[in-house]
Each structure stands twice: as C-alpha cells, then as structure tokens.
Image 1 (cartoon, rainbow, N blue to C red):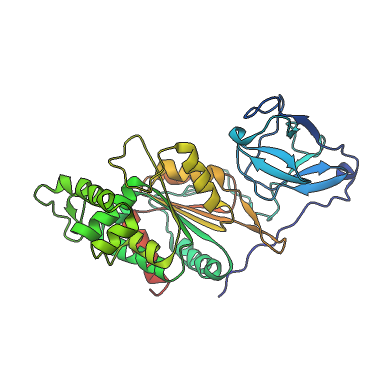
Image 2: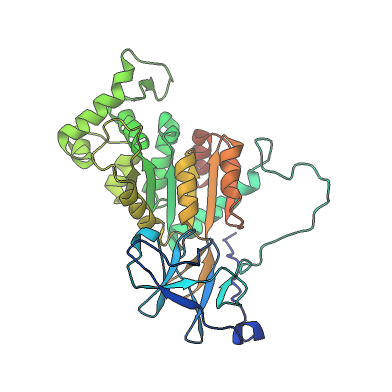
Length: 362
C-alpha cells in the first residue's frame, strides 16, 4: 500500500475575520541583529501574514525566528541575520486580529476523545511499535522518490558492525538525502572502517582491544594527515561505512562541532552558528527527518524543522519527524512538538537501523 499524504486544508480567507483583519504591523529593525519591540516569533505551524490586503504564507518557517518582509515575500530569519531597517512583522496574537494567523490544524490531525482514565497512553519502552515501523517504511519509500530524507545521527549508530552496514545500504539505495551529526559519529564510523573498532572496542565482537583508547585519535590524526576525509578514504583503501557511503554516493553531511571534540576531523564546524546555518540549509526542503540517539542534535533539528513543507508546485504537505532513542525522556521531548509529524520510537539505535533496512528489503 502506497503512502497517502494528508490533504492540507488552507484557511478560508473569505471568512469575515480574515477579510476585516488589518494588515500586519511592520516595524523597521533598529540595528543589525536586533528585532524591534513586540516582534512576532514563529512556531512550527503554517503562519500567514496580511500584507497589502493579501494573506501571505511564510513558506520556510523555523521556530523562534522572526518574519521579515523581503522583496514582497515573508522570509523567516534568525535574529543574527536581521539587518537594520528591515521591516519586521510585529504582533503577538495568532487569531488574525493583528494580521497574523497561525494555522495549527491544517492537516486535520486526529484528536479522538479518550477516557479520563486509561492505560498505556504515553509512548514508552513497553509500547508496541510494529505499526510505527510499517508506517515508516511507507514514508521512506514515498520520500525516496518524492521528498528529501534527512538523518540526524548520534555516535551509537557507528558502534556496531551491522548498524553501520545497514545504514550504508540505506544511503546506497537512496533513502538518505543528507546526514547531520557531530565529530563523534564520523570519527567512530571511520575508525570502524580503518581499525575495525569504535572507541577501541571491536565493532562486531564488542571486545576491547589493547591500547584501543588510541584508535579514535589515531584515526582523526590520519585523516588530518591526508588533509580531508575523501583523501583519507582513497589513500587508506577505505571501502565501507556510513561516511564512506556518503562520500561515494554524493550525499552531503554536516558535522557540527562540540566543546567535547577530539581533533576534530577536518570538515567539523568549529563555529556553532556556521554549523547551524549549514544544518538549516539541509533541513530546508526536508520532508522526513529521522533523529537517532542524539539528544542535543535532535532538539536542535526539531527546533529548526516546521511541521509542513511547501513543494515546488505550491502544494503544502506535512513533514514526518521521528525521534529514536533508548531514553523515553529524549524521544518524548521531541514528540511534544505538537504535530502529527513528530513520532517517537523507544529502542536502541543499532536495532532500529537494522530493522528498518530489513523492512525495506535491503
């Protein structure tokens, strides 16, 4: 059965509250990187702004950013990208009364009435996720051909031989359009290809190796010796793994740095805001986002991913957002974003990746 995307129901702008609403207030930014008082902050939902009598959708929305009128379009920008004098939308109501409307139910989410007292309403390690996996397979098959699939990975994915191999198959078969991670994921994946260990532990037997605590440092140092990951792969005869598959298949990856990083690898962003811009570049256009075993990266990407996407033909469609973690707290924190597109699966990273690859017949 092929995936049936929910139909987006736009607001009926012939309703009196929209017709009689004033234009949204526009106030010049007082300085670079500073919004005017009473600025409007964006949510994850579709938001419309009445400009010159016409309701405009902010097509590329991001939570906690501000709407700016640029060249007749509503652009959503971070505070640090505001320029002095730019017209910023101001107003903090969301019901059209100030020319601002937040459309939180455009996909007609199911809200079935529940008993006041009922068991197993939260998603925990005791939840059965069979239906979630089946739905995910359909989402991935659909978006491989009709969307953009972004994966956000923690280093645990690289700690196991089978999970590395399974994710490589997903990349090679078109199920990964971009990868967002930190220095550790790439380091331990390359360590697995180079020395067959991750943090000095054999990726298949899970046995620690003599002097294994040097292995990730040796890997980083060798990559830096060659000058780039691509040159390291070629010079050292690397032929497997996650980063190898990204390099050979032309899949972009963004490695955001951390104060904890060793090395780091050459492509790691040391400037957190440059990393944020690079991540947002890949998230822009994403129709499915899958975050696995990385709390900070998951929360960051969750904040920059809206619940909808405007396709090139103007169609508005939902964004599927999955958070996979063995910790219920981490997964459910992302599911609390308030949209049908956010879904949590409580399991370990390795089992999830292997199950998904098998479910897709890889």
